[in-house]
Amino acid sequence: MRGIMKKLLAGTVCSLCMMVLHAQSVKTKLETATTALLADPQMKHAIMGMKLVNSETGELVFELNPETGLAPASCQKIITSATAMELLGPGFRYKTEIGYDGYLINNKLKGNIHITGYGDPTMGSWRYKNTRDSAIMRQLTQTLQARGIRRLKGALIGHTQKWETNTVPGGWPWDDIGNYYGAGTSALNWHENQFDIILNSGSQIGDSVHIVKSDPELYQVQLVSELTAADKSSGDNSIVYTSPLSNRGYLRGTIPAGEQAFVVAASMPDPPMQLLSAFAQGLAKADMKPTSFNYITEGVDTANYQSLYTYLSPTLDSINYWFMKKSINFYGETLLKTIAYEKTGFGSTEKGLEIVKQFWKERGIDPTGLRMIDGSGLSPQNHITVDALVKVLQYARIRPWFPYYYDALPVYNNMKLKSGTIGAVKGFAGYHKAKDGTTYTVALLINNYSGSTNDIVKKMFVVLDELK
Image 1 (cartoon, rainbow, N blue to C red):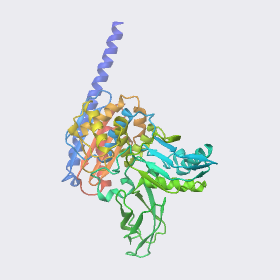
Image 2: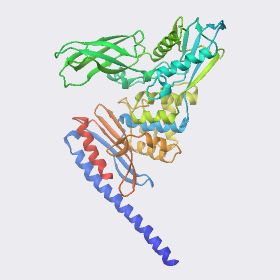
Image 3: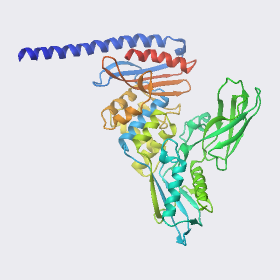
Image 4: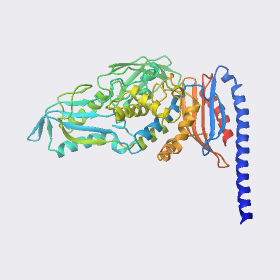
């Protein structure tokens, strides 16, 4: 027995020694690789932060500028995601309440239809079968008909009082807000608050570019094209300029010449109005056209309205999957305000950020290392430390919802990593299991590099390859 124990102890000591030697080897390799990257011409005016720990033990393997606040771009989503999964739960569902007032005579409702929103980001989304616009309209009309309502003499009224009227966080660049990835969020959202613009360009460089249509069609918004045609190989160099709640937008820049149906994705200026417009059209097709439609942002108590039904979204674990996998900024801002609403009764970016920072402060992260302006990372004013990112990732590992969280991370360089990209900012943060079975948690951010993003990514992957 004593001999067996000695062998077991010797084996354990040997394994620990191998782990230590491997960690030392990885550290040495990373020191060499990061030194080479920092000497690269692309990094002449840049700053880099990196932290690597053993996921199982939490042991520090390597760090560089771990406490320096850097713009994380979409790597910030790992913080919003983890906070939402913890505070809301993977089974959380958004609700949208449908009700009516007035009275019903001979299958005609002499009253109004009311839609009260709580921020559901999936209403009209194409990512789920049951959230597509056709499915939503079918459920609405069938529910009305089942209650004996075949005609409507009244208005369609939306309610957004549960959330703030400001749809876009402060700090977002003007060049981003009008494009699809700059879509804001409201208590009532539709089609992920984005739409496509179909364009027709002239055959010669410098020719005008004309707007064919928008899909879905915008309600009372005029789009003006100042685009011109460029070389056929130039790609999409267009920018859409719209501001929240505006009724006019501009397209500037270039698209390739000779395009008959070139598609540019943009953000909806007024999501609640777009939802109500879609609902009004759906009701009209069912011969229940409302007399008017609009939404209310404050003051009206909906307690006296008769309930028709409450629409429920897909669960948060599914929403979070798309948020992380496709890096949807709109989802991040929605989750932030949802956290605020669920904890305080009012959805606002400011209150959501306060809750997020307090949550992580209670778990050992210095709030000064979490300068968060939004929930998605789109603002260049965000500054997060790689130390904070690694601590969030490590916390997620011990939570019951971690399998959903891990599954939602994209794969880059054959690693489970969330990436982040804005102007002169590139980052990766996530997990990797090495060939020897060691699991690492890593965050790597670079700010203010020069040259192309593709080139800096290749060089970052050279560094990350040392984990394999």
